Length: 79
Image 1 (cartoon, rainbow, N blue to C red):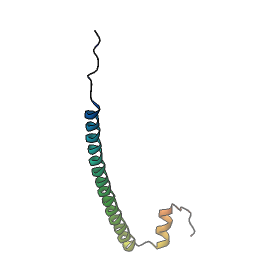
Image 2 (cartoon, rainbow, N blue to C red; image 1 turned 90 degrees about the horizontal axis):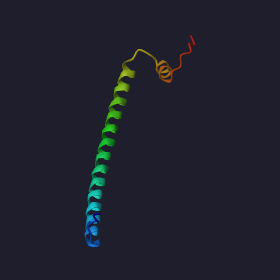
Image 3 (cartoon, helix red, strand yellow; image 1 turned 30 degrees about the horizontal axis):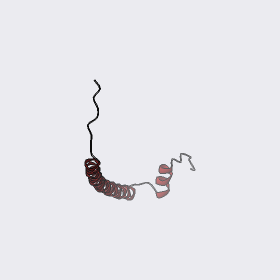
């Protein structure tokens, strides 16, 4: 004998749909908050790296032109 599906009322389905929408909205809000936290951490890391790089450039015995040539990958010797 084939078993049929249990009859579900539209009211109970509507309630389940609303419940699931609520869960999805909470998940979306949490995702957005986590995404903002990640963006802030990346921003802080980039600022620290920038400061670290500037300190290294200032302490370096190389000229600005030499540093820029190195960064750009310019291997030509103009000397």
